[in-house]
Length: 156
Image (cartoon, rainbow, N blue to C red; front, top):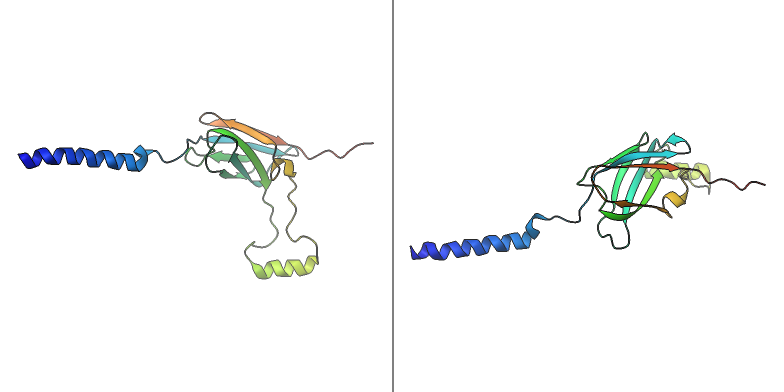
């Protein structure tokens, strides 16, 4: 009987330590499910990528999803972190060869002689590398629609 009494506190202590060390089941920052559309120059973005980058006091990893035929979806497990996020949207253009095919890249580089081999992203950098798009992720199944326009050329 004495050994059973000593075993119970040991098991309770061991269980509590395991819960403490595991973080009580918490696996990281709270994320949200998001779905939406991307329209560029009055057309659905055929192939692209959308990235949510936490900013300011929002902490956590970036979330990235593919945009196909104008639509994107993030599940809760992979969605943006709750809070303020900068949104980057870029198209994924087909250069005509696999990006990891060094021989094809070298052949294209020879063909274009000093000009860029990869096509330039038609989406302006104000929507991707220098994005000014900001959202605040607040709840589940947030619908987000982005309408992007080409920059207008100065008129005279």
